Length: 602
Ligand SMILES: Cc1cc2nc3c(=O)[nH]c(=O)nc-3n(C[C@H](O)[C@H](O)[C@H](O)COP(=O)(O)O)c2cc1C
Ligand code: SF4
Image (tube, rainbow, N blue to C red; front, side):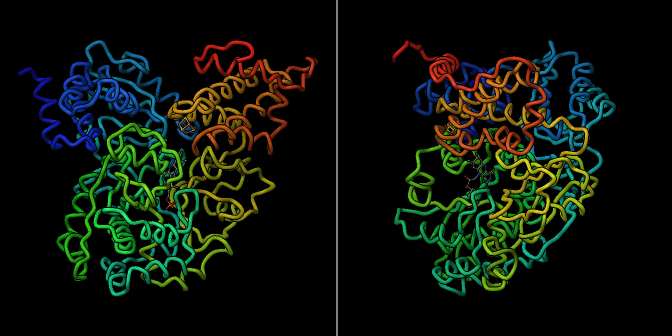
């Protein structure tokens, strides 16, 4: 048997021929062979009883699977807007110069491969890269020189890290240079937490009482949409299935968000207890933590925390002494795809498939993991739920504003003196936050990631809350002298790359938006280009199937609303302004990009 066949066999056996473990099987082959060769795919498809086309569909969907060798040292350098602001280009050039190949290539000896990647959750310590699963932060051209020379001397990526970050980043099982940068601790997430206190209290109540406590607290989901947690748990409990599941969404792919990474590093017990509380409330025996591939460096540590909690009877049989309440958690790793943060795409991915969003309804509460009722909750939501158990819903409700209760953990990055994590009570003004972070001279702040809002100075007095300035966590500060259009372009590039491609309005529409933007940025646009840009934004928003496409035009729309003169200054002067939007021409262009045959009148 060849090495390839042995590797594939080992990968499949390790995961008991289970199709839901397809990502793990492919990850194993990728790690062992440096790519997933054609032959390996055929063997896997044959052994798993899948069509080759279906297997290709999965393998080609995720950034960290490749049919070509990615290099013995596979460098994935972040290209988020903040990475660019912090000197990413000079670091990229240094990698190219030192390695002797360009981005998108591998050195002829196969030693080093250079790759771009969308966002790795390190915006407060950019430029950053993931090399063979190990995170490197605060990169400079000098550090790159050193890293490449260590690669040539045969050191492993892990051996190249000598200075560890703060908190648990320095622990034996993490040993990472990543920093937490916790700047402000609030009363919900970063207040002291006694292990066992949340689940201990929950099991002394009935599941319905736990749900009522959540409803009393008015806790709303921290993953972006702000859906009331108590209500979600109630729906899930009321939907009868063979089993029910709690899924924690730790995909955290929104550029500029990194708060879940810090919570996972510092408060895994609180998180897992929050999952156990959810499990008790909805009647689930199983919890799944869906962890983004970029946070793989935390895996061993998280697994060992789960083990310790089993020993403490906080997971396993008769949890916390409650007879008949059995609950355990396993971790599923992603493989690099922003769309897998969308809850239904996440479930598909957790089942070992392409991470494409499902049609909704039915919602995960009705038809979730393996078709069973499932509550999908964000990392921070589950920790807040644990706190609600401890402090009680009434007390929790006293914090915040009319529609936003408790605190919000914010990830601050960009042009400020103190980037990092701020746990702020809902209702804090953006201005106060900027003052604390040393970023008051900002010209704009992107709140809620690329799909959120670009807030101008005149609105800095607004409150961080679901009703005024909602955010899943990302706050990107854009200081004086920055080219805001370049930031918008970076965001559009992100959406083009991360569109799952299922529906044409998003797949083709975002390409059109980016191209129109480039034309305007290059000084070749006219008034009609601007008008068409807005029309295309409306089409993509209205016709896309899921939240990604429905919000992807926001960087353009939001800056057009608040910084319109920035676009107008780039337009050609003295060229006729054509205000009408030619729908036939637009549809023709759209179909061409979408690869459809277009015939007049059809
Ligand atoms: C494109 C897209 C990406 C998303 N990414 C995340 C994510 O990384 N983490 C997250 O918790 N929610 C994400 N969401 C929201 C989830 O679909 C879902 O609403 C959330 O996990 C529910 O948890 P919550 O109720 O605790 O907020 C994303 C949504 C969309 C449309
Ligand atoms: S909107 Fe975009 S990400 Fe969502 S299903 Fe359509 S193509 Fe996929």
